Image (cartoon, rainbow, N blue to C red; front, side, top):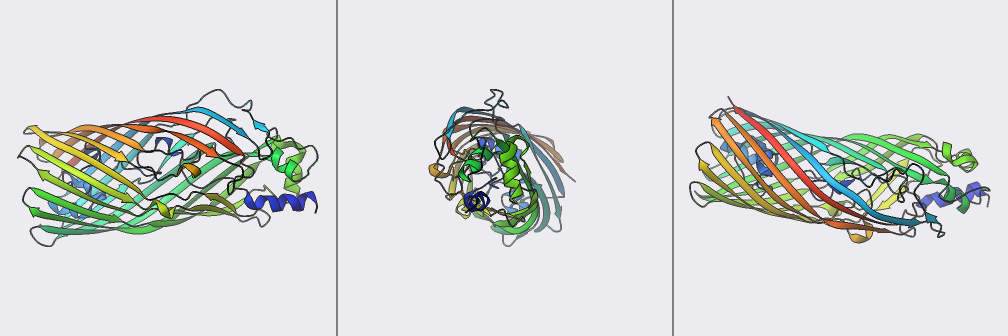
Length: 454
């Protein structure tokens, strides 16, 4: 067998860029979910999400909440997310045991997280007293991270970005005095960009190419892709007592097939890279990859303890088990499809909160939450070094007139330290090499929101 034939066989296990879309070190929800669709809900750590009716932003969590509002309304919410994510240590080696050291591109920085602004827009039209229609435009998944250039784990991940936009028209109807229902349609646009280095030296040595030097002849890969996907959401609001409100909601899975370009830069890999490209490998080509945004279900309860005090609780489930294997298909027939094992678990979110109205125009909020990670220890990657997180939130609402209100929310998220332990013998990691890495993270979120009624 010639070296070119051997190299093509070896690439059957190579995954260049796992299209997982996010470096979730600073993500606000488990996996790569974004919860920040409402600054008022943020103040309660989203304990009030499914059963809340404070303003029209709650239509994102439960479309049935619209029936609790009068007049026509419009709202805008913006959340600023500031992560303090650090790479606290890393070491690695090739499948042949050659140590991996940082390159000259590594500037010593250990910062991972990127600040982000997440906007959301809402509108509602009162057709009748019992029939409402609305539109929510949100960003339910995504964020951005950048790992240090030339770091030890550069063959696993460098830059990662996912942007999503969800246009969600809804309709809600009051069926009886104590039960309401809502339904919505989701049109989701997703755009992703992922990069990492390529260990051309190890690939060349395994293929028998003369002059190959493991970890010293790096190439670079970039994948970009986008697509539209569609789904639906449902909600019910029940009032078994005049002081108790129960909300139930479901948001469907949205399937996308991202299509775009795979670009390779092998200029730094010398004759080894040239030999691989002459065999038809690592040539710029089109790509496609499936990305399934998970289904979600939730239940919430609000109880008016007194006229001025309200308590609430929330339980939410996300079907992350649909996130199993990530496969990238290359239009170039010489480049075999790539596989990354994820094997995520379904996750749970639990929250408790309280509101207090100390004066006529003011409402104060507080909340705590536990957000369970879906990522198993054995498949955690530096692109998604996710771990359990714990929320503490506060906020307030100020309504100086009956046609306008303002909201502020703040949350601090404590994230368990995470560890990445990947082996070159794991599926798809043959030429990503062995990697041990550790991360530490804390997140601050500030949300501001305005609502007008007309």
